[in-house]
Image 1 (cartoon, rainbow, N blue to C red):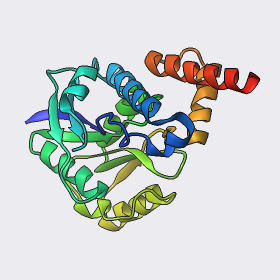
Image 2: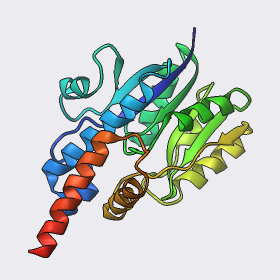
Image 3: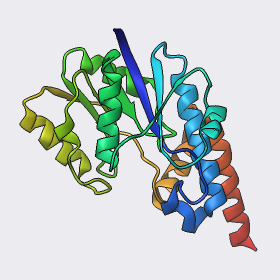
Length: 226
């Protein structure tokens, strides 16, 4: 059995299926481009960590698109399940048959970096479960050494996802650690916050995202001035 793996849980960038809450602001084509650069930057930040990557992809879209963004040599695993919780659990359960510990990360996190993942795996050395929150009340990373289906049996897409999951972890009697907080990009306010952060901190390593965000905001400024 291998030591550890990162499960990269993502949609395939597909028109009308990607970043839909941003469509009124950006349009469908730009939402596809945005999801593409998010995936590219996250993958570039984790690919040289010396940790196996399992790319767990949605059923919508063409897998070749995702392979073109990342790397053909990675393990690609189709998401299976009736809802988000089942899909995440099934992916973790599958991966734990081959690895001693795994962390699952989302793909709406262009600011995610190696340190966020290193901290998570460090916590897993002494804890049963690790969970890392987002500013909107969700979580972007969850990791464990033994599968635990019950903690995924909650209602998602609410501002209480992190707290409800934490309550279920506590009820299970498992030890846990909480990792770094991160910005999850779902809607216009998140996007504008991302722009502000990238504008203020030039050292953040997400070149593809930075370029596209600047392009989008440049067009917005131009339209407002006309």
